Length: 255
Image (cartoon, rainbow, N blue to C red; front, side):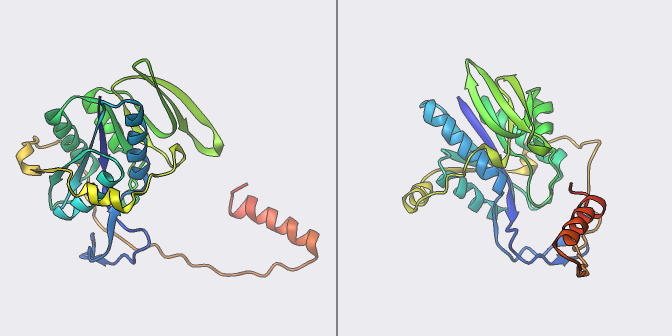
């Protein structure tokens, strides 16, 4: 079985993001493997452990620097990588088209993983677009996965601790959620071995993707400003507790 994992090269969430030219960020900061994609790679490796003939191929659309993210995935246990090289910021429509085209050209997918979302765009669309293009069933925010007799049985988490269980035919697309596993972080020997694994480069324009009727552009980025005004809650313990409950219900709306 060929298992494809679609990964993204994203800014470190701990970095200070600076907006330039209204709709771009200053990229002089640390980029890394999208955290949700770590769960996707880890699950692909788990499946391969039970299917010795399986091959894990990680695919990424991004600039040349995105090779670092592919190397991270290779160190986690993937077998080889494919970089679709482009200096443009692509929306989920073009991204899905590119990933689908490369996967079809490269081999015969038995299973495709993505992360539930990327921590930069948070669009949560790419896995559904890949599934639609390939006519594969899709499940996202998957927190449990079993492969049984050529079918995938998954638990897809909803809010409030609820999960729906789906049975899907293979091949299918799985959007990995945080509850799926604990990411397998590489050891130093894993990192050394990953440097010998191959990364194939494909220029985005060479894919000859037809001009698409639909598309999305980032018009403007704005920093998130949170203004908070502390308020003292007075009274005895019982009064304070009642006031906190009221605030949580009526103002914060979390209970």
